[in-house]
Length: 456
Image (tube, rainbow, N blue to C red; front, top):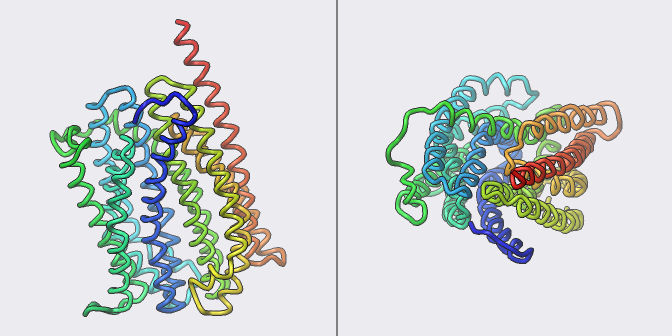
């Protein structure tokens, strides 16, 4: 990380930061993407089971791991202020928090998954596949959460290409393990969709061990000595992590869980509709990796500039990131709309599933713009450590507006399952508008505070 003076230099640094994050996010997402894609090739029941399992797993994981994202703005601001020892201590306490969260989610899923699935109107085969998939994924919770903390540390130092290289190494391995355990190759048991969970858990452990080795042995990470001189639990550092991280986690949970809630509410429709919905959601989530990566990059950039006391630079980075995301969203929406049938054909050969998926993808194209605005704006707000109002806005946008609108349209109009997607569009649009207003207010407050300090 370094100071920039011109718009051109800022854009270069932004791209230098964001492109590796994008590659990392896509590589990480491809793990879930290929879980669903390869399960769909094994059978429709396996596709539906993995889809349901993934819909339960993802919001819980994202919500709790989102708490750990607090490490990024904390460390980036400390590094910007040249307080490296404090940055090390923050990461170590983050590791303690990650272990606690991993134990918590492991216990809840192990005990509660039968109850959750039992309240859904699922075919027996789909129920069993979803349950076993979740059980398999539980074996990878601890390394995944620990990796989240270590990745936040690496990224906060501006070394986003390192995490890119780690995930580029492990993603092909995950695909190969999927092939082995789903289809029973090379003497392994033929597990169908359940094998996707087994393969992913093994991959998470691999990612974790590689990351530990790099941080312990390579420049510039080794000078922090993260794995030496372990401190006792420090409540004040836990408090900072939780005060910033819990609202981030709740915001992410509110956003991702609405998609999972829609998937589960669609369990009243046919297996073909569930599968088609998941196809559209799965591919749209892949496109979302771009605004999400911009969001993660702007958190680092804004946090670094705030730590160094350069408020105007932080503001410029915010605007550059939002503008870049909007441009991409326009392009991706056009591609998604024009190529929706080839996309559906990539997942399945079932004609009924394809017909439904093509229609779902139309709505997916529509909310690309809202996604492109709200993601980088949230990232910028995290860089300012402004998270409380953001999570309140997320709850209102998604759960007070989005889901009720979708449910009403799906159950009381002729839109049927497509009504849920209209509700998603309404929620995302509301979130984008309110978050943008919040960012402008926060920037104005920080600029005013900075001027007062200079005057004094």
